[in-house]
Length: 318
Image 1 (cartoon, one colour):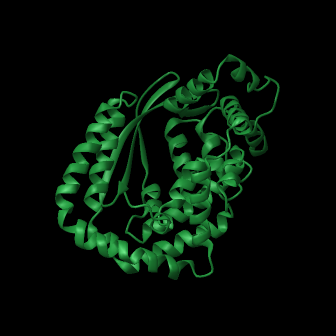
Image 2 (tube, helix red, strand yellow):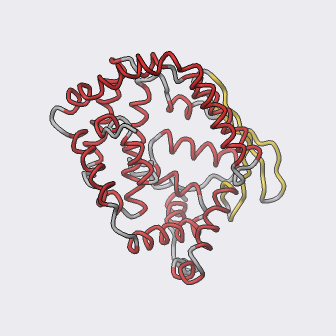
Image 3 (cartoon, one colour):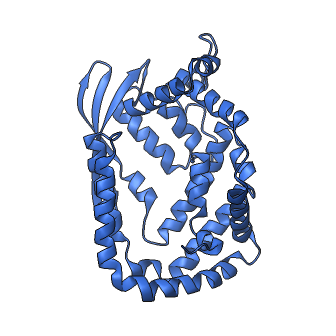
């Protein structure tokens, strides 16, 4: 296996986004986190938050206020108890970020990546149809075998695989002009993130992590545009249709354009208080809190009379 931190610089900000659980740069308006009172509007509001690179707002729209507060408290508690970063991972992260933020980053990275692009052209491009078919079989089998995914989730995942594999052509990734544009976007994003070490990235509490994540998301979007993947256009094109509603439960069909295709899936929504949220997101957050153990769950509980951010937002909007 080739270990080349220069080549990995092209994708390092994706790792940053995962480290931060990304998305959210601009400070939301006073009522930005007020959850809409119907399931379709709730989905559209989350899509708009992602369109705006605002994970602070996105995260608050994603869970009921009390559950969001407990999730944030658990994140921060785990942060305080976390083991130090692996030294090798920390070294590689710092090396990549240093390369991305160096004064001559774009020229140096393009110089270092050029041999890899040439190698890809000569050794992989000719085998791509077979590799593409093999990747499709492997990815679809992995999705099908995942017991945590519903049938709807599996169909959505397989549709994404088909769209991405059809888009991923060797000539796209070996185009030097596109590579330079992507490197420029990632370099600018690394400067704006200002997280030169893995320790700094991992030390962020939940809301600061969301803010930094929005910067990373914006940079990833810009880099993806160099390869004709317009994620903002996909978010602009999100359409939500109410299929059924029974009391506090609803089923919504969500569709969005991606790489010349229309991707659709169904999602279950649940009403809590006056807002609507993803039923899966609620289940996952509650399971995470339960897995932390009763002592941790109790320690992260929000007192009943403590004001939440969403409540404050709603109050300011009135």
